[in-house]
Image (cartoon, rainbow, N blue to C red):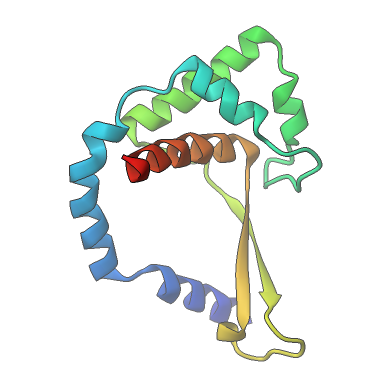
Length: 140
């Protein structure tokens, strides 16, 4: 059964034409999105983590990240900024927990389920930063 789910998720997310289009669009917006992450932008994203949310595969709650000492927060900021500016995500930064939630009870087909990815909170900080920059572009 897990093989079928893996195949379904890969088919759902592996549209070659869509990837090519995104790559073309990426070239156009890269300059607008590429300034390094600011310390204040990082702090804002970190503070926006909602309390009591499910942990990702690293099992680190967002509240713990919010209470880190200054030096450790700076290390996390540098790590996040490096990923953002280089576009290279390290293997230990990746990973999520996939949940399949039925749209209706007793669903038997993959298409009748919603997929939910539970990300690491460190990854969520990065996605909040990127989302904030995209929102600014959309408003412009």
